[in-house]
Image (tube, rainbow, N blue to C red; front, side, top):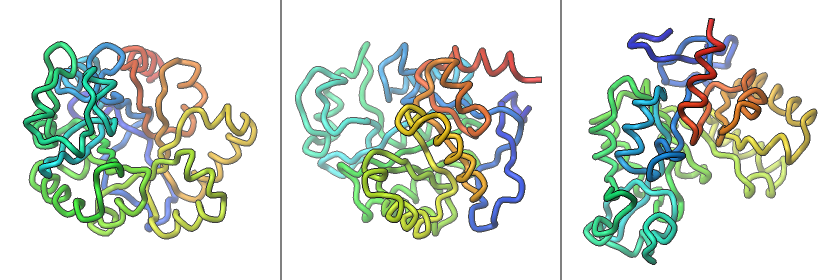
Length: 271
């Protein structure tokens, strides 16, 4: 058990120094992070959802950051506001005041990145996903400065589908996770390997659907290969115990909408 009652993750032995990360983690079972907070029960990517995920026993949260028209970093997944507010709008084309005039569910307003950093306990883990729809490489320095001032890097990961958004964070010593999506797979094995060599991410953040897409046997062989290469693995979005069972032997982090279900089951399994 980690200090403060937090579960930790098993340490990777024999990992190349090139992939050693700054996340301060130890233990036997995967960390559980609430996907956009406690998304199954509360409005996603709101301070309410983040607080409820931690109250339900999550070790931390995963969330998404984008940039408003007036250059403020806001916590929202979609490029538009349609799905989460019922009001049509583009995040990158709206000011903070315009975004904050919208109801994101039960009266919740869109949080700023600094709002999230201020409310998270110091021992809570944060996986901050940079969204390429509204962010550019030029934004990374500002985001890094905010994180330096307000967050212990031992409880922080920066992730993105866009590897170029992660390069400066990797150079500055942040733990980075490369999100592997359909685009990365479609570009083929050679391009994927070249990206890994360029970025040298600490984590590969993989969808649980990898088992269905390439088959159980091939997926297990692929995951063993990645672990042998020294990569730590995060899996999203794990919402059933069957999915948790499939990834348990490989995962260092599990991201879930169903926080209480995953936390309860992992506690039962802990020695």
